Length: 363
Image (cartoon, rainbow, N blue to C red; front, top):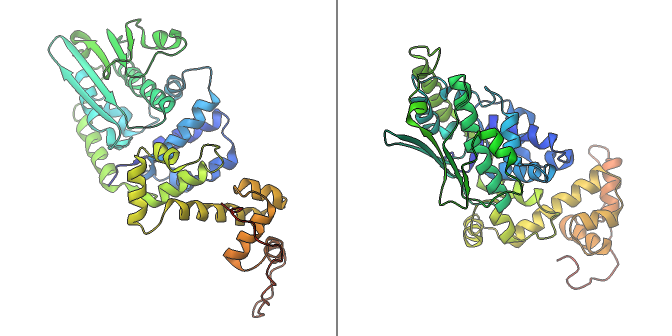
C-alpha cells in the first residue's frame, strides 16, 4: 500500500530544500500532496512522483554543487523523527544500522528504496538501491542516502567513523572534494555495480555511548505504528495528474517523459490509464482545461498568454476549446466570475464564437 510514497517528514524536508534552492512558489502550489496540512500530519504519505519533482528542483537550484550531499548537510539529527533515532539506539553501531536500514519504509518509498547490511566478521557493509528516475535525480538520491547514513553513524557513536570504501553506481561528479571531505575517505568508486559503504568490524561493533536499555524496542514499536497508520494522500491517478500538471510547461512533455518521472515504463503507464478508462490524450486535455480555467477565472492574464501556457497554438484555439468545454467564450467566463449572477436568476446561453475552426489548432 505504501509503495510509491514517502513520509510527510521527508516531504516537508524536501519542500524546505526546494524552497532554499529557489523553487518557484507557484510551481510548488501545484503539488497538492505537499500542502501545510498534509506535511503536518505524521501519518500522511506524499507521492514519490512529487518527491522526484522536488529533487529536480533542488538539482536545478544547485547546479554547481552535489545536490544530494547538500541535502544531507541540511538534515540535522531528528529531521526524520523516529527513523533517525533508530540509528543511534542499538547497543552497537552494527545493531543500529541493521535496525535503521530495516525500517526504510518509515521514511522512504519501500518500492524504490532498498537498504541491506552484511557482516563477514571483518567488514560491515551497507548497500543501497533506488528506483528509476532521471539520471541526475538518481545520482542525487544515491549521494543523499549513504552519506546520510554515514552522518547518523558518526552522530550515534559521538565520534568520527570513517568508511574504508564507498561505491556509487552513477558516474563521477565534476569534483570529488565535497564527497571525500564529508565521508573522510578518498577510496570512492563510481560506476560500481551497487551503491555500498563499508566499515571495519571494529568500528561497526563499537558500543554506542549512552545507550538506554529498552529504548530501541520502544522506537521500533513506534516505527511499526507509524507504518501501520500511514495513509497515502493521493491515489495513483492523483499522483499521475500531479506529475502531468507540474511538468505541463516542459518543452519535452510526452507520455515517455512523464513515465520516467513516475518510475514507470511508457507501456505500463498506458496500461494503467486504460484500466482507469482514460488515455494520455484525455489526461492532457483535462490538465489543459484546468490550467486555462484557473487563469481565465482567477487572473487578468491576457488570453494570448493563457493560450500559450495551456499549450494552445493561439488565442483563437483557446476560444474554440472553451466553447467546446463550457459552451461560452473565455471573456464571458471571466466576466461571470468578476460579476456573478444573482441567486435564483438564470443566465441566458451565450452565442457561440463566430471565428471559423482551424484544423489541429487545439492539439
